[in-house]
Length: 304
Image (cartoon, rainbow, N blue to C red; front, side, top):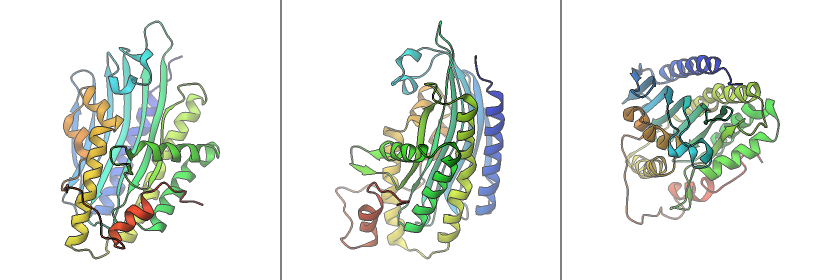
């Protein structure tokens, strides 16, 4: 049977509105709101702030798109779905604070249905969240990972270590041999192989989305008023370059959006506003910048 996507869409719209309300309250600036339609089917809502009180650039999107053929980014590991009609919906956000002591954060939850010819419908959930600090604080990383664990705990203790390891593998820049940040959780194809019922997989995805605010906003409150100078801003811009490299080279959501004919402005909303690259730069040994590479980017069990 084809699962009913209506409750999923209803939840995602509510989650999107709730997150925007909390972000606007934290920043003190209304987010710009754009609604858009996709000529090939579907549409969405993009909400963005630029030059806010807290966020230099940040946004949260809802999208619901349909199409006649799954794009290559969604079928590389599922060739049997090539050319299948599909329906995809989700909420995704990326926030780039101005203060370098406040980490960048990403969160995404999504649902897919594909209808391969002559076969039963194939559906799955995906999502996760991850934290990208510029200057690391152990209590922040521990809090974020604890929130991720708590989101998954009602569904079995086995999910957190699996999804945490998946996140560490996924948000890794292979050409740099370097993690993007301190990780979090990541999952995809949840329910596609029958290991979870639709109701359980949907509930797990809901829990991840609902835990985002409490995972991130307490970190913001601790760090947003720390003083910083040009040195910290310069390092922040350099590290943001890694964020851009990952999103344009590896990120499946970005590739899916561009290959499926999504709205480019919404897809590339995740790009930071100020970025720098340098040739063969390395932090000074013993510096706060070096500590990020030595203590925070290597894979680690933050809850040990």
